[in-house]
Length: 395
Image (cartoon, rainbow, N blue to C red; front, side, top):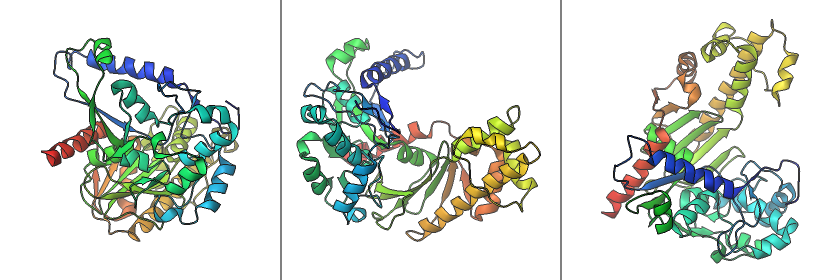
């Protein structure tokens, strides 16, 4: 493929081999081996995809969701789809979206594009390789920028621009509705004595939110991981969005979600910890905010190397300023969410939530009851909850 700036690609065949190896390793675990496997549940993150032929073999490297090569294509599509925010779950098409990168592929890799029978997202690719069936779920595909949440189908105008049809895309159903059995070949490869179904259970944030305890509209989970993500259950699809909000189908029931995010929160905090508190703890880092409560907020640097501009004597106030910046961003996000729905229950999760000092700061700042979720496997529990909800509904 053509090398471009901000390009991130993935060898899907290597990814498949790695995934098979991980599944095999899990099944060999002493706590699992010999147990009856009921189902394999898959959640996914964002829009990594690959063009494939009719045998579902990749025609090139996949394009990772972080990739932002499709700047011109995003601009063109925004002009062509002026009402995009009313049905897509996004304010506008941006370069990282699946829809924009499909157009980039059409314009820049025409021979590959014309040969492609399908353009599966990474979870759809894995499920096809495991089962021989091509299907997706409304939560994951709904975050691709290709989905019309009102009509419950791929956006017709985008299909026309891309010169594609619905046949290029999978059957799109509610999370965990469809479960196809793993193939006989894969069963033998894993040395299993029976076949089990494979379910797609939406995206990682939705599963983690459910695992953290969210149940009803107005419940919100604030995940402090690589990004700071606020996931809120809503009664209807939000269409008054800003560029740091995504709306879509909640994996359980007839609800939707509103997702706000600060993409670099965890990255910035880790930089501060590694640079100024290498031998210390995150609690020591967050304590700088308590030590310097009146410090002005500081806009984060764009790269870690810039931290060497801060002297050791300035570092505590600088760290306090960065923390204040994200606390102010958090309060703005909550204010935006309140415009769409009344907030009821607030849950806190993610790696940074393990810091007792950070939790103290949050409790003092938010002025609302907070439930701390220290479950390390919230995503797994959430995926199982999605699967169980559909089983109950089906029965």
